[in-house]
Image 1 (cartoon, rainbow, N blue to C red):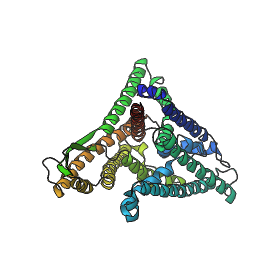
Image 2: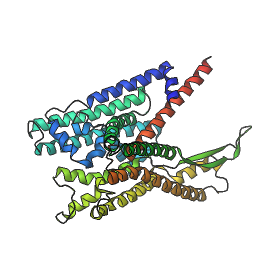
Image 3: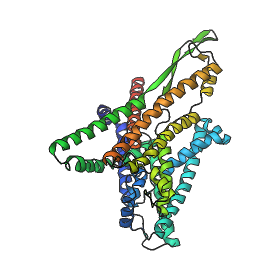
Image 4: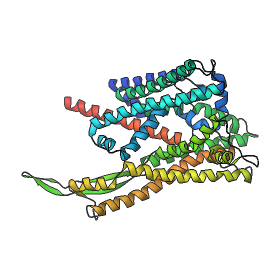
Length: 445
């Protein structure tokens, strides 16, 4: 990795792209420190620290969500809008046509995504402004002016980050939105590492326990990163043979190729979907003043919120609290369901089989047409299950250590998958650009 980056800095064009990306990330960090006008940031920060269920959103915004900066919404509305548009391409024929219409269609879908991002930003910022105003966290109280200023500030911040991400994609290195998301997550890791060190190393009873705690932390982190790398790069290659055909006086074709089916076909989307479904009721309940609770005095709604709260899972201190780990079982089931669901709308075996037949391709030992579709579906289903189990392991390990040992960190399985995936993809793009430049130089000579 370091060798690739060092070689990239030797090339002026790539060096300028990397520097452009770094300057853009500095701007992101500065914006995360600028408070929204009219908001009492100290009270809001204290309120957020007491709401552990909001850590999922706070880690995606690099901590700007809890400090209520102008980038508090960050790129989360854009991510939500992208997922919604992608899902709607299956339900709405017009969007499906645009999706298959090449570059022009993709530009139109990107335009719809921008409009939806602004709409979501306005709705989310309005809900936050009214909610905080009723709680007394606005310096000017609830008024049209104060609420309007917050809506404009947060929406403008989200729109600017969306634009900046597109600029990084065009002029910098890698996918801009993914780079910003990666930077937000990584910016909170030093604080988390310091908290783990204070609790399990420097705060241990003996030196031996401290060393053991440090070794366990390092081994778990390295093992998870290695596992995620294997999960991200793992794929099943299905051999495809193309028959020979005559074009004019030449005999063409006869090549062999393969269809790469990634083990983790859905990426991090199932984790985001499942986490959002669990977090949404808790967030709404928090704004309504309802807290998760257990015991005889708790209502049915509070007990359900307790089941949905990840901080209540894997608690071995008492059997009464451990029963709320039922939420973890539901969470894993949702991960597997969304892995199958998302793959089913992004990968169509029937379409692949039809295209192969048109191009004279076939899978050795499998007849073209429906038998090819059935074979691809069977292989895909088995791969999805393996990938979903792998995702479940990555998502559950941080939750287990948090509930069993109190190892609370802002980053979890979702964050580690995003970090590893974005880093690998960015390095691949740098290497491909270096390779293209080498070929161009060779041709020009």
